[in-house]
Length: 498
Image (cartoon, rainbow, N blue to C red; front, side, top):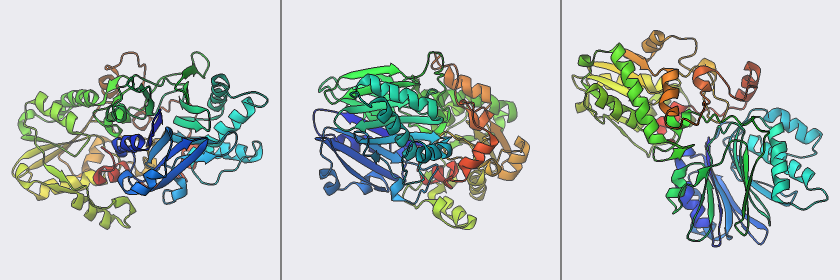
């Protein structure tokens, strides 16, 4: 999962891209990069770290030009410790192309062999994004032999990419001297939206609408699944569907609405905040079927994505909503610390309980989701230590039973607390007095009802149905060979994500 942005303007774009990346920082804090274009030349700066740390005044001055791309990275595959894995990526032929990518290519290993063997192309990192860039470059080279690059040839290349590449991909690329290209996979798993600033005619593409609105743009529309958009350097826009009719099946990742996206974003016509309120409403019904309301004194969210769901739940069951945990955003990331003991200590440094909200009370804790269960167990214990009488735990998402292969770094199935365990076994492991999960169908309805045009979601980590239809146990094992060891709960405790 990453955040990407692209801008075509009549004025310098370095500051605009920087500001947009700040608004997308929740989508990745591992590394960031910006590339701009001036007179067919690319200028790039990228490094590990957060936006405010990577870009200094001297770096911004070295990024001239009226067109550019940016990315914030949350690594799910490849070498997370290598700065070479940071995006954007660049190839010099054909034309010169730079690219940023959000998603995960599930057949990257096979594609890498094809690139080396038949396409005669070289990749220099373990990143699946570099593989995707080289596939795009090869197809652009093939369709433009003996002809000029036009929107039509660009769209033909994207159509060829769709035939070769599997997985999830929201892509923005710049072709030197020509313009900017953006496209989504045929399922629209990862988000991408478009806006035009009517004041100056500039265009912005971004992972979330919040990046548009926070920089003076207004959301126009989402890029459709299987669609490609090409904006030339004069601001002329062309678009086309690059998959055969009927092959685009819009199935956005439902975890975006549960946890990943900022609550003030609108993705694929759905308000993330409203989706989380709806999840709280359906979760309230589940809670009341398990725990009598008289046994609950207070509802407390586990920061931060669970807050809207917890507020709505509290209102519906008629119980007070309280902030019982304070997050320290300035502690290092637990997942790079050796040993579970150190990890547990760091969780407590990052999340501190307000004892007065727990002492002598039966508390209902609400989280957006539970992945490994290690952080949940620690938080339940914290609540007991500061005097809670009983501790109930409710999850706005269903049990996470399957790995995610489309760009969210969820653990192997053996690491998932819900894998091969029923709810009672999970409850005993976590140590709460009652454990209440969202229902899968209720979750899909709570989110999907906000855009009836959507016919389904990728909810593979909950229901085991992988929408691309080509994911097997063997392919998951191959993907896990290069998996970055970062869990959602590590990120949540760190404040890496909203």
